[in-house]
Image (cartoon, rainbow, N blue to C red; front, top):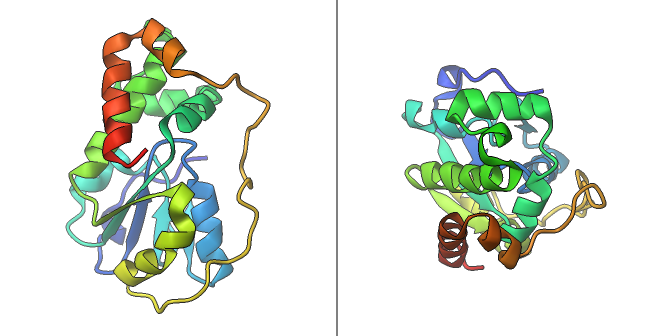
Length: 193
């Protein structure tokens, strides 16, 4: 269930907006903060922050707060995005105009990946790869203004949908849309993948 999209009440110094694409690990990172008693919620506004892709189109409306861009390896996140639920696609369509019924699922997830990440890039204070969370956890805490402490030992596959999708390949993406695949690949390289 998505959060209320009105971010204005949370437009305050120190409030944390963790944004990324669907299936990039926003549930995991919210759980990690919850485990150290920091109220950053997944897809809901906590006292200290929110971790969700639903907030991406609204990041430009805020004047304060800290935005972290969370990324995940492109083929892994695109493969997992194949499991986005119909109700979520309706929200995505209302926010971005992107829907699988237009040109197919693979085309839609590539467009969504590019659109959301490009928008977050305009506003983020820190970008990190979820795969590197062990190395960037201290930096993430620091930019948020929290004292350093160990990354909680919680399951990393908390919200996995493994076995519910067929992994995608670069060749398959290129077959579906060579131009979009080129842009996804370039963005992935820019993010260190």
